[in-house]
Image 1 (tube, rainbow, N blue to C red):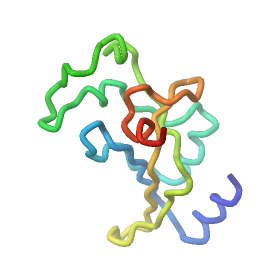
Image 2: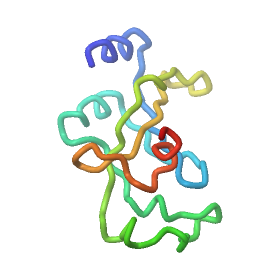
Image 3: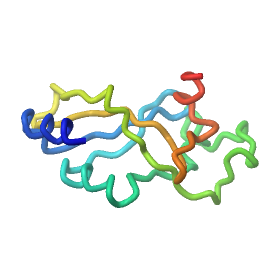
Image 4: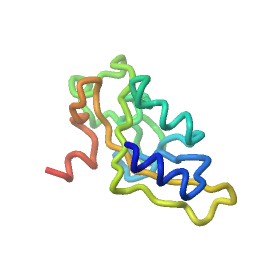
Length: 121
């Protein structure tokens, strides 16, 4: 982790954009101050709602994913950053980094319907 802290300092990164592709390939996520991104590792990670994986391209709810695999009442998943994808974003005025994340549960298991995880297999 210290290598990445130094990388953020060296590049004067003030914000980090955490991205995750939904099941239609559309990037979703959140952008936050670097300090909050780094502190999220101590507080259990950044979270997004599991319901994200039920969205269709039209932003309506897709019923093709069985509720037994992804129950809408399941709550959130954790964004697990893939530091191999960490890059400076050249098009923002503010020094910003982007990182692609994986979707995991509280035990670090990949979410079963997460497309990037499926493609890794």
